Image 1 (cartoon, helix red, strand yellow):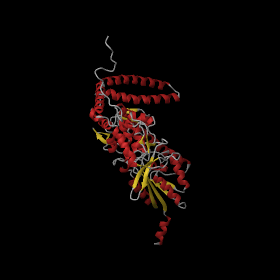
Image 2 (tube, rainbow, N blue to C red):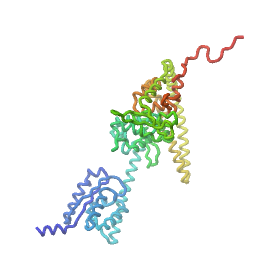
Image 3 (cartoon, helix red, strand yellow):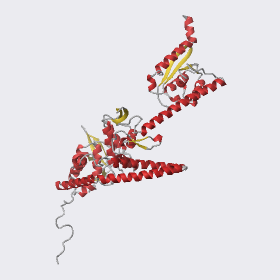
Image 4 (cartoon, one colour):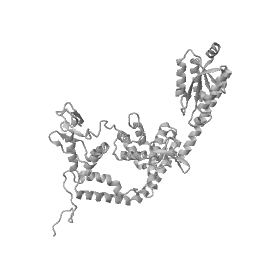
Length: 525
């Protein structure tokens, strides 16, 4: 018994490292389980005592010494500096597939008193052995680089044919389309993404933070530990041309390609989103907005003109909402006004903006006439877009000729930037020129239902909407902040153009021009 114990104590302490570099390899003969089995059989033949196994199944390139399995192995060695371990690998390619990383790992193990052993390669510290080892390490790197090049070539060819080849973003998923794996809309997230892009393009959402707030309220969207959609996902979604049916791979030149997948929005909508982002539409939105205080930040103090804040005041049995000025130099500083009073008077102000039935009928007739004119001009717009597209393609060809002829780096960068913008414009024109009818796919009633409902009764939209819709009502109804006086209520408000034009808020009724006309009458001679 003591002799067996003594034998075990003299066995070489051994660690096994297994690695796969792709998801596919996990199910093939080079999987982690099969590697571990071969390494254990090798250790048993050598009389080694295996203490631990460190697997890595992270795909992709980079410094593999930073992979979790290798980090854990090196930490294990550091924790037992008195031990001289043998590190067993299944294959030299599992050791490293990069020449520099190969010898970096060799040095890292040597510093810790460990030596590598491979099932199909004998490490030799002689000059000849190091030479052979260098050749094998370089061969592994060559194979990795060749595989990488082949993958990129295949993926680039797919993109050129209109196929997206990366992980689908929110709103899309992969599905078989006529025998080909393509991205298709993934409901309900596809509709959520479409709604966010269209509302951001039209100004309903003023900032990415507002889009984030809306998406976070949807049960199906992916959220972080804080219960919110990541803001980086939102900004990436707003800038991604994929949703407009276009493909652009930045690391492959960044040029737009027409995709073969179904777009969620038009290219025009996507371009409006980009324009708003460039114009600073991504200014941070207020973080203190809530349904409890929809007017916070929009109602201003009548004395100093600064926006009021709001909060709850604790009573005997409940908490009560109040608005108040927070400017210390103001005479109204910290003088609270009941929330129900401020918001109730605001509701009456909205009620007064509703136009009369006669004005509403006139407004509706004008919009219907504009719709008719727009629909009738579809063929003209299509022809103009086709002409503009031909001219733009000619300009792009000329710009490409200049790019080929120049050697100056600043000029090359300028030409590439210009060509990229022209390609985006080209995609918009192509969509307009190739659209079958070049007219809205839905009718007047469906398009203007929400707008007409808002103009007819803004109070109803205010009372039934969420905080995002209420903020939209504020922006579309009033041209500036509303000043509120504790004793007199709201001061004269700056009403937005639509309500001003149609006689809202006390403006005189508008009548149709009579048969006499607008010119003054003249006395007959």
